[in-house]
Structure formats: structure tokens, C-alpha cells
Image (cartoon, rainbow, N blue to C red):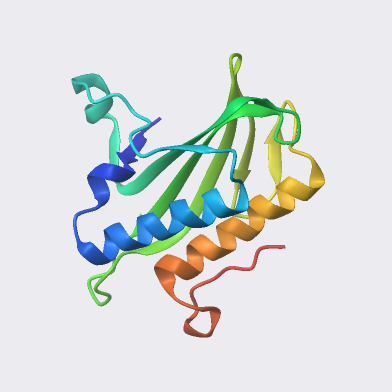
Length: 154
């Protein structure tokens, strides 16, 4: 399995850094208890060898285990596709994993049916909020739906 590049390392232009900051601000506004981690991966040779330059990762941590999210940490992986005809890469998928001391407990993927898989799932209200955040991430990076930027999911 390939890991992604830490969000802090992908902020290579003002425009891209601003979009990453907008995603962080949006998630923090939606879920104010979360603490942001722009470098969720270790910076060592073994991890760098597995990095995917077409993705970025953002970590978000609760102060303890969240009973609504049924996890302690969220890892958001934003996957991009670079098209030579478009100046900025476009988001093609988002994965969000919910983790606790036992490892990954659930996963949400915007590729396919936008469903949750795993041992548990977050409560319905926060699950819908997460899906809404994903739609907004598409819009932040790809533009409004009128420009073909958002896959509304189910």
C-alpha cells in the first residue's frame, strides 16, 4: 500500500497552499473539537519510498475517543489526477479513515457508492457531515459543480 504525501509537503504554490488551508478551516469549522495534523506520516526513508505524489494526507485528532465518530483520529487522503491541459491537478477521490488504538475502524470512500466500510460506522449525522465535507473538498480543488468539479455521490 502506498502512502500519500503529507499536506505540508504538497503546499508548493500559494494557490495550492490556500486550498489546503481552506480544507483544514472547513473541517475545523464543521468539527471544532478536532486538532489538525498536516504531517501525519513519518519523514523517514521507508515511508518516503511508499509515497504517492498524486495524493495528500491530512490528519485530524479528537481530544479522546469520539462516541459519534467511533474513533480517535481521522485520516483524510485526497487523491489527485494531473492533466497536462489543466493547470492544477483535479481531485478524483477522497478516502477518510477512522482510527483508534486498535487501528482503522471504518473507511469512507468517494469512489463508488460513497459508503462506509469497516468494523463500525460513525453515527448517521456525522457520517452525513463527512460526506458534505468531501463534496466541499471537490469544489475547493475542482471548482463549483457547474464546472464539473463535484461528484455529488449518492
